[in-house]
Image (tube, rainbow, N blue to C red; front, side, top):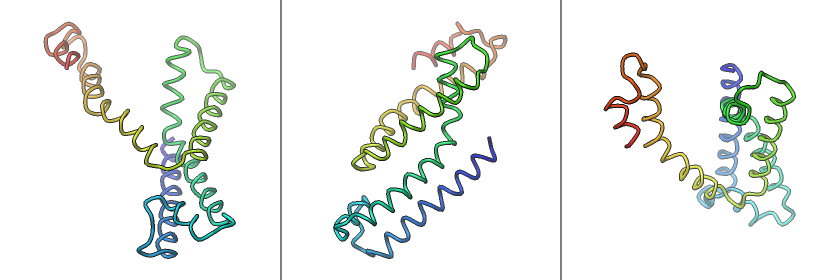
Length: 157
């Protein structure tokens, strides 16, 4: 999985770098915050927009393996906690996730809304939920029981 993540990050970085570089070289100081909107001003036939959308879709598809593994595992643990590993279920969850993510990328009007949703949902987790869960999970129950004052304080914060 580490090898897949490394390749995915490298290819994703290259795709985003090339999109940013050619967007800047095409428009210089007139690049809008959403690169696709800049292309729509100059290309009435939308061929450039289509090429950029395909590049972004490819970059997103190559980025997804980084988050697909933990998300798929979390879905399997929540929906099928006591079931053994089953390839068809494993592939079906991956296929549904990839389809939903690609549909989101294709139909999202701009990236700001997506970043807003991701920021609104991940910031509370990173600030409040994850530190408490990590503390409760990392400190063994033998050293500090679950009903000890520090663990109760962490779970209430």
